[in-house]
Length: 307
Image 1 (cartoon, helix red, strand yellow):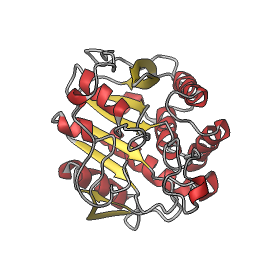
Image 2: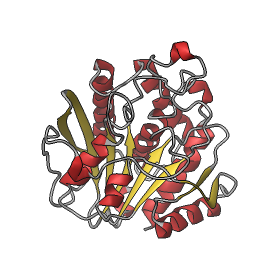
Image 3: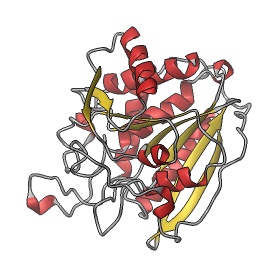
Image 4: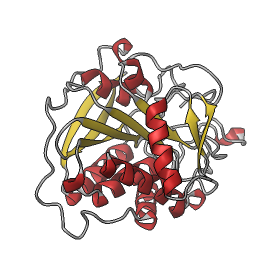
């Protein structure tokens, strides 16, 4: 998301305005049932923050993961492997934007109306908010900005009780989010590509971004659907997380929910934008709390299983 994300407005273009170099790759026209290989020991488990934190560490060990880089592609392979291990049906959307190869990864489970939970997995190729000007052209590790959302989604893939779901859950891992504002790129290219190729109308889209901060504070966001926010924040409150999920408006974000909002789908940006290491070289794993990951993951697990 852009440097003025905490202020006003939105700079992400509608999905239809992306250049034609983003090739079409439609998603399935109907929900896909989860593979029968889901292990009995994982299905129905409770979201574990320490397991999610290990996923953050795995990503950071790969290094910076900008769109189009070998490390970025390796991260996509890691995500696919983890999803297959958890027994989910996996598809990919490969596309090219401004000559750069990119790939969304989408996993599906359950039957019925579609709910999408998404996160970007690419990292910013330049630490343009770093306090040291000498660092501002260096790529970031993105432990929180990229790593935390992926960790929540992959741990959800492991623990969701698919048999209890009344909807088809799609876990979407977006590429090409975090180069926005650099070299003329917009934000949320991958999310816009997915939104523009959907053949179904999702009941809800939840974007998880930058949620691992030790000093976690997640506020209502102005571009997000109020009804969905009330549902999710109410679950968090019942779980005892009211000090971290704060039902007050504070930010207006340009993030991966925007292309879905522009296409008329109810969407929520679940984000802690008070992270002081955003787009700096200090966005490293020591800033991430397993407890913060667990609060978000457990909230989403209970919300999804209870819908």
